[in-house]
Length: 325
Image (cartoon, rainbow, N blue to C red; front, top):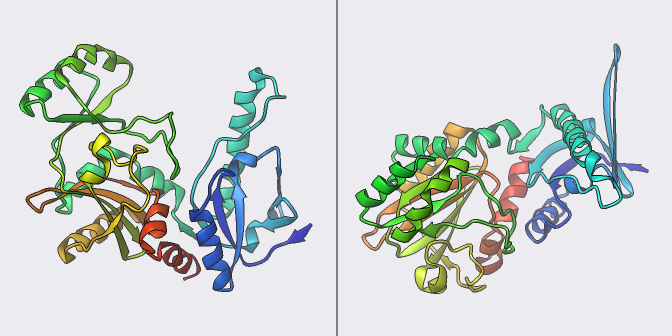
């Protein structure tokens, strides 16, 4: 097998498309050597070996016709980490253990790359994904946030609903969908009606996020790449059937618009990202009819392909530049 050199490692899964290809092409055009690693293909289609002795250690990974060592990797784009696909032939009683061992093995490989450039470092990504921490830091750097309640207490939800005069939405703390395509296995931001409160007792099984419903003029996806900001805006009329969440599938292709952010908002976003030590983030904001920008959340590995597709924003170029900087 051919051992690749000076590799830019692109970590994703086999179902990923468009964004991964755009970044790979941008890297190739700049003379870099991208290596796509589909994490769901390990261990069935990817072979990995690490060896340790008193004289040192080595890590070798084989995928397709190519091989890489940890010494050959210059930078890592942590696009997606995916659960191993072990197929149907392995007995279900062994699946969980094999998945656990596979994840632990890859974790050792990530550790071998600790001294190269990452977009972004896994520990920082995990730290930044906590939505409660995001809201705290956003408020501290001067971003405006919605009134928010996170609870498993049904009575607290009912009181909060009354405080908000019935203008309340709910969502999860963690994401269930991870691609540009719609997935039926997703829980989108949804409006809460008074009759929904009758089911609030089910919160004892799963805490949820409740927020005031913010009036919208535009919804914004703001992509931050190493100090550069790329913005796409959606007028709420573009998705009238799902005004609480643009990710639902009735948002038309081509609905995204260009939008310029105020310089003071960009400065606050930069400060926010510095607090988390991240080079990349996909922010969600609401622009209200009164002209106020409301921070909702940031996804340290969020989607941006629709902005490059519809608006020709050079996000893949920016990511490639950041990786080879």
